[in-house]
Structures are given as structure tokens and as C-alpha cells.
Length: 137
Image 1: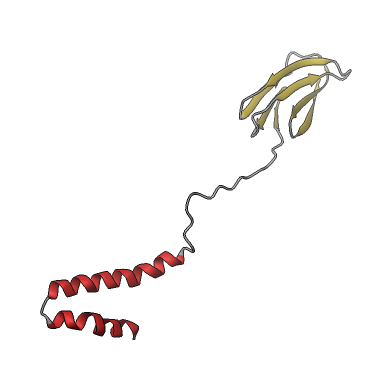
Image 2: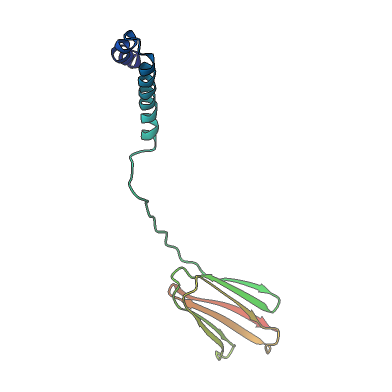
């Protein structure tokens, strides 16, 4: 109903002048405006720029045991200091390493030639301290 009223008011004088090309151009412009408006509004209000959502999560290290080898993998989102230590059953420090500035911290601990004992792998970062125990027989 609205479209036919607009057509009668806007286009009839043009067609009466027998300027068909101009009438077709105006019809196309009106159709583009009428069809493009709802499409633009369907996506919601226009937002300038990119929305930035910061996702914060804490990841614990993953320990994978294969035989006498323990593989450790940690996603270090802060890229801060990560301390890797190994202690024996008498709480003596067997291994110590500090890693800084890496996004992914990976380490394989091989206990194949270690003495029979119970070893504790300790991983510390800004989110906490994590432990894994290995029994060497």
C-alpha cells in the first residue's frame, strides 16, 4: 500500500514526460533503499570499531607419563616466570629451571637412569603451584 502510494506520487509525473530511463533509475534507487534498510537494521545498531572481549582463564599444567618419562606442558598466558623443580623423597632438589617469556612451556623429564625413589615434579607460576609424583622402581 505504501509502495504503491509512493509510486503514484513520485513516478507518475516522470513517466508522463516520457523519460523512461530516469523513471527506471528512480525505481531502482527506491527499491534499493526499501530493501537495504531492513537488512542494515537486522544486524542491530552500528558499532564503530572492534569490540574487544578479554578472556581470562587459568590453565594447570598437563602431565603425561609414558614409562619412566614424564612430559609436562603448560600454557603460560602471562608469559611470566615459571619455575620447574624436581625433588626426591628426602626433599632434596634434583633439578631446577626457570623459564620466562614463553607462551608454551614444555619439558620432558626422563627418569630411566634415576635411582629407585619417589620424585616430585613441582611447577610454579603466578597462578599457583602444581605437583606430580613419579615412582621409579
